[in-house]
Length: 362
Image (cartoon, rainbow, N blue to C red; front, side, top):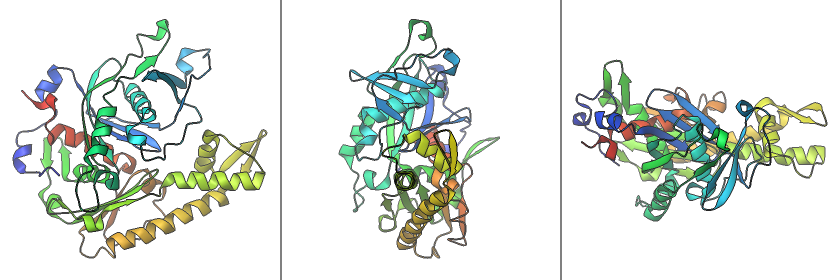
C-alpha cells in the first residue's frame, strides 16, 4: 500500500502537464463481474453491463445509431458485447480472461477513448489480491496487468471504421478494489485543487464493497490494512439473479431463460413471457433477503459492532441497491455518494495523484 503524505499533494491541481501534452487518456476502471464502471478525468462516470459472449452477433442493424451489440476480436476469436445473453463472469480467471478484455475495451469505447492510448488503474477482490498473511498474489496480479495490455480490435464495417478504432492500454496498475474506495474517501477534490484529508487518512475505517460476485471488506488504520478484519465473501448481487432465475424456472416450468430477461425481472420485478407481464416481486424480495442475511452475518464476523471504527463506509452497486436493507447496521455508517462508482473514482485518483505512471513523469 502506497503511503500518502501531504507532500504528494502540494501544488497539485489536476492531471500532470506531461499527460496532457501526450494526449494520454486517464481512467479509473472498476471492471466488475456485473458492471464495468469508468471514472474519467473530466468528471464523467460511465457504466456498461459486463455482458459478452463468444462469436459474432449475427445481427444487421437497420440504423447504425441504433446499434446495441458490438463485436471485438482478441487472440483470433470474435466476441459480441452489449445487448446479448452474456456468458457467466463468475469464475476465478475472469479478471485475466479474453471475456474481461473485450468488455473493458467496449467500456473504454463508450467512454470516448476510441483511437487513443490510455493509462488505467483497475482492481481485484481483496482475497484475490492478498493471501491471508497479507502477501500479494503476484502471479494473479501480473496476469491481470498483462491481459489488459493485449490487443483488442473492434470489428466494424469500412463505413464505421472512423467511429470505432482500438483503444490501447499503455499503462496499467492493479490495486485491491475496496482499497480504491478508501483512496476516493481520503483524496478530496475541491475547486482549488486536490487535498489529502488528514483526519480521514489517519482514522480507523472499514470499507464494505458489495459487488456482483463478491463482497469485499477492508479495514484501514494508520494507513495500514488490518488483514484479520479484511477479505472477501464470494456472494453478491449476481446471486440474486441466479436465485430469481431458479425460481422462475420452477414457477413457470421454463427450461432456460435469457440472461437479459432475468436481469430485467430483477430490476423491474416483472417478467414478460408470451407477451404478458408476470409479477415476480416476491421472488426478487426473497432473493435479496437471503443475500442481506448472508452479508449481515459476514459483516458482523469481520467487523463486530464496529465500536473502534470511526466510520463504516458502504460502497459498490450492491450498497446502492440494498440501501434500505443495510441502513441500520452501524451507528457510524455511511453509503458513499454514487456508491457504484466509488472504486472507479478512487482508482482514477490513485492514478492521478499517487502511483508513478509514465504520464506523470517529466
